[in-house]
Image (tube, rainbow over all chains, first blue to last red; front, side, top):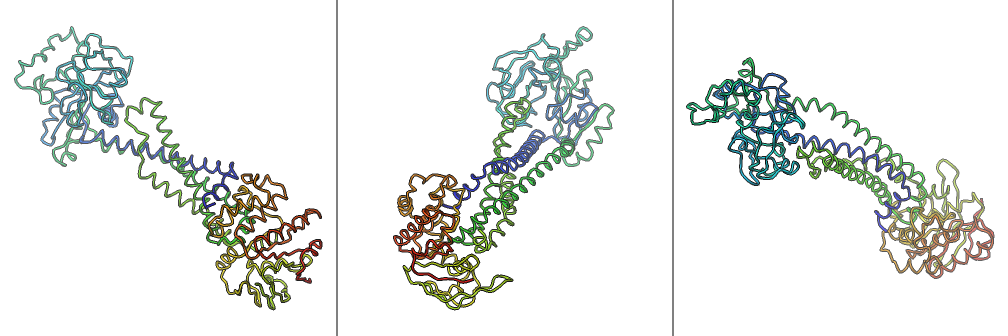
Length: 419
Length: 210
């Protein structure tokens, strides 16, 4: 016999009460854990995906959309911008690096990104098999794409127009897989990379017949003054388009001047990833706050329920306690017993809640492909969860204070004499 | 072993009750006889250290109980005293064996499995070892209560009205068993009762008048 056997038997003697209290508390803690993990992973995902990018320049439209589309690759492009206008921005002295992106096609729901090798450096992409794209129509695919779309080195596929499955397919040209990336747990796992020229080739078919002579950009030898962004065409080319530029400033001055400079151009707009994601979080934050409030309400109700259960059971147990005292149990021992019972409940409830929270995330990841793409994991334990456990310990103490004090003050002789 | 001199006790905000002087030697089983309201439970609680704040002096194993603090009294009870109450009152959340194991745990003593095993056998409870005490018959429950009181081998075994709810036959059985077990454990039995049926069983009697 020891403290824990005694407490466990008392809890076991009232299974319905015990289970109800556990479930109530676990539910509240599970909701908090869920929000905690999602919030943390979303934030770290966003920082990871947005690192090194100070500004995104694209066609006019919603700045949020520009960020979502060009950094997180979830929304649709705002439109395209002329290459010569993009060059003007790239040549600005405040710009350290400008990486062009050309979007528009996808395969099996995965986006095809036309870009150059600077992007590889920016995201620190590593090759797992094969090589990086170099010639037009060569692609290097993200690890998750390889895994789920079943693409291997040397496979060919036709892209479809648009960002979702089932768009018009570009059957005239086939992409060839020349490389597969290492997993990076960022959005790049779900992307297909190729050169900007490849994207142009795919889309020229629409204009074929009208401007047949456009094929001249394949002929690199003829270019005297190559574009800073796409070396296969000459500078100041107004016939080609890109979707956006990812910009890194040369100095903090850029943050002051560049957005204004870009937005002054009639067709361009600039969006700051830091600002837009902060805005996104403040919008999401309302929903998160409501859920958090709900979770705290659950926890409050469960602690009330634990308190009432303890209080009532101790009323029934007054005689038990008096008997125990008559057998020589000190008041301290009785006090510790009551506290242990309460803490056992709250601690078990929170551990259960945390486990359930992670299990729900695991299930969500397993069943929602969208979540798999984001690289969410159910197996990361956050510091805040330890705080939750410590908090539940405290909660257990608070719930037990009054009942324990009553037990402590019990007049043994009176209880035994009343019988 | 126990000497009481000019002991009186005042119920909070109520009358004061005075007790006659008496002394009980080791091994001298004693009855505290009296009608209900005569204060025998109060006296039992006073000399067993469950109730504090009396006037006069009670010496128990050379200790004046009034000088002991609440926690010293707890220790004193743990060391020297076993109790049997009218309704047995076992801890219903536990099994028979766990109820017995509770005694050394609460008294902060090492649990003596052999002693518990012996008592269970001796009282015919071996088969009920793992049974929840709620499933026991009244007789079985009473035997568990006796075993529980004796686990720690107390010097004194206090019993408060152990027979009041029993019929004649069972009354006899229980008193005999109590005496037998007390002798076997070398404990002095002190029993408070108004039950006239036990008068002939124990010769040393302290009679309280209301």
